[in-house]
Length: 137
Image (cartoon, rainbow, N blue to C red; front, side, top):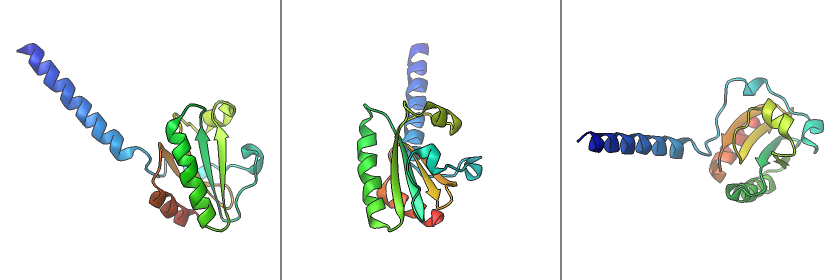
């Protein structure tokens, strides 16, 4: 009987974790100190967009990173003055640590001054990226 109760408890905990993970994965949000963080063209290695910049941290064998790359490139192509910058997380470890990036893909939405307006860990939806650009522009 005790084994059955443990099994039910583990299944319940795993279900709750799965639902929470699904809900928050790829969601563009504002985190604590993100509004104070600014990134420059020198740190990114590319020029910032005139109106906003979509920064993507990726890794070599990340499947969701490929889909995120296509989504962000589509949005940057649709909205004038928006740039898409993709950075390899392994090659930019200091920046990754400084921004507290824990997984790939991580997307940062920057305004024209390079201030972090929104952040997503995981693959964001196209509509969410467009809505986040509204906060940056």
